[in-house]
Amino acid sequence: GTNFNTGSFGIGKKARSVVVKAETGGVSSINPDIRKNEDKVVDAVVLSEVSKAVTPYCRCWRSGTFPLCDGSHVKHNKATGDNVGPLLLKK
Amino acid sequence: GTNFNTGSFGIGKKARSVVVKAETGGVSSINPDIRKNEDKVVDAVVLSEVSKAVTPYCRCWRSGTFPLCDGSHVKHNKATGDNVGPLLLKK
Ligand code: FES
Ligand code: FES
Image (cartoon, rainbow over all chains, first blue to last red; front, top):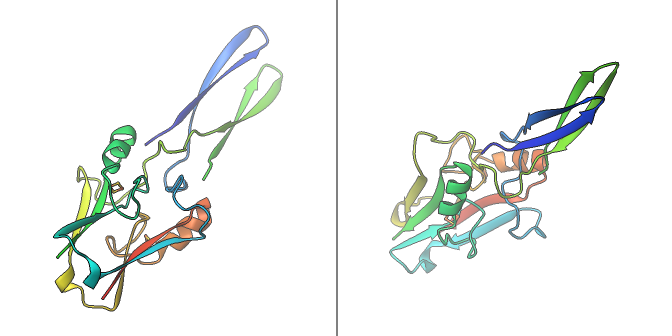
């Protein structure tokens, strides 16, 4: 999960290039898209209403069915080297 | 949730400075520290064992009591402009 930006600078006779490593450790937003109109995205599950034997809930903020997990954490982990996964509710 | 790095380059007679904007949208790891020895961090909650009226579970990957929420999402949201919060299990 490290990002790089490369800039090239032509100054005087020679072009110089530089690689800058982003300071992403712990200072980046983790939710790019979900319910950005809300100050804080909190969801509640009433346990008596859980119907399936196992219900996965998303913790990667990439699910198309948030707050449920749709498996999108797999793509996120592959793209970034991350290791996140869902919370499973078990009856 | 945007990170900046500033680099100063002294080249020839003048020092020049540049600001590089990191490409963080959707390509960053969201879990900096929790159980990095595991390929995928998945937790299970057996509903019959839930004891409290409301139990918050962490979705920000910053909790000191992960998988439980300890309120650390507040600091994360303030630092990054994010809007994440816990999943509440309600009996
Ligand atoms: S889709 Fe987000 S944890 Fe599975
Ligand atoms: S500490 Fe992570 S959601 Fe509250």
